[in-house]
Amino acid sequence: DVKVTQSSRYLVKRTGEKVFLECVQDMDHENMFWYRQDPGLGLRLIYFSYDVKMKEKGDIPEGYSVSREKKERFSLILESASTNQTSMYLCASSPGQPLLKQYFGPGTRLTVT
Amino acid sequence: LAKTTQPISMDSYEGQEVNITCSHNNIATNDYITWYQQFPSQGPRFIIQGYKTKVTNEVASLFIPADRKSSTLSLPRVSLSDTAVYYCLVGGYSGGYQKVTFGTGTKLQVIP
Image (cartoon, rainbow over all chains, first blue to last red; front, side, top):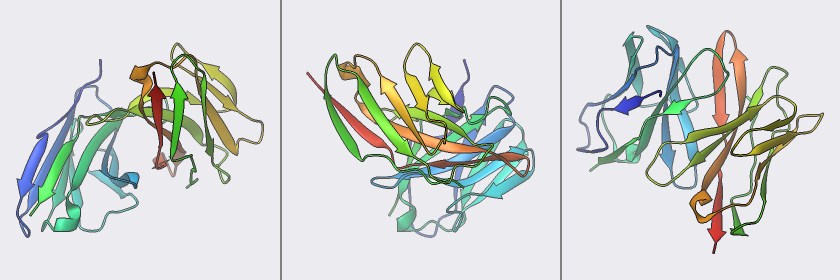
């Protein structure tokens, strides 16, 4: 079974702090994704990566950056956390094939105060 | 990227068949249609995927008409445990990598 793990289930940070969210997958998948999920807005793609050191902006990249130094690990960075970044953050990975079958982690609920 | 439109919510009684339709008018030639299920406090889980016509697995069926501008997820004989949010996802490879768009999902409430 594919396993996608995220570093924390719950996280509380202060405004202006630098925040790291880590995601690790154990199935040698090429693609990895970061989403945020907010009530009424569904899942929105922040960034994705299709190879080590490669990244592409999703729909809402502002205020975020990512890092993928190793194939199994994809980090989301909030350079200076703000209250409007309070959300559920979901990481996913997928192989090159089949298309779009993504495996999700359990999520990190981040609260910025 | 193709944008998807789904009903916000649906109610169904236990034992009934449920059909959830997703509209994706500007689907691209190489896009696939994928459906996910999400329970509260969990990440989404893959249900089914198709390109055209009909696909069936042990959980659901997916109907895609010839023009591919919509798709219908069919859940046979739902139970209370099928209460969840269902997402329609359309996307595929673009420029050598996957680009995807989730809809806002349909909240299915199964009633005893």
